[in-house]
Image (cartoon, rainbow, N blue to C red; front, side, top):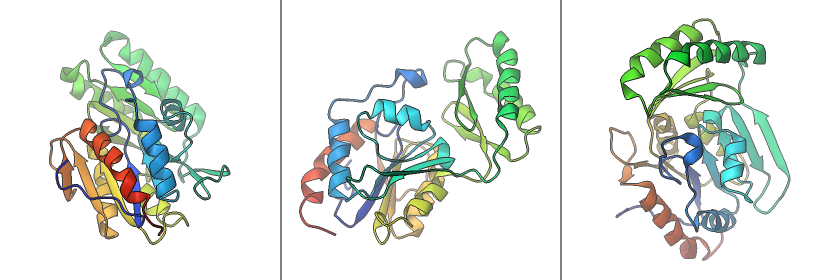
Length: 257
């Protein structure tokens, strides 16, 4: 956490969820939001005049569930879905499907059924169904990574407009094009974010595009944990991210942009 930037009213803050706001869990639905996180995010959203967004591979419903009662700016499923409020404190929302090559739900359902059938012989694997894609988790069976890759490669060959995204012990079938970097760029065009200095905090290889985007716009990427990264800064754990966020509130509340 040492040396991480102090937020000012001129910053825009972008946060990944798993491994950044919450610790990685054995199953996607086993994560725990620590006490103090939701109030801290609410305070920061207010202090930054709405220039705070969650950019995640999770679904929008997941984020709303875990961060209830907050309804923050969110780019979910790696940017395939967006929701943003017009201004901080404004209850009106805009939602968009950011997938220009949308795959028919019937095709996605067929892919889901194919994977479920194949996974009957691999009980250690977990298939997660999302709004615009599928995620195959192998955290409990890391030796099956190559099998997971083959299964997903076979699926994506039959699905034009889709691609495979690799994360920490997960392979995701998602719409081609949207990614976290594009999500940062698109948020930065909105009134609440425009003209600010972006900071993106994330832990996974899927966050690298967002680090690049933030740094190309004069901001900074903060990599959580170990591993090669283009991010200019680094901290050790999600616990340190949470402590850093809690420390920012007095600073961001002093003054206006």
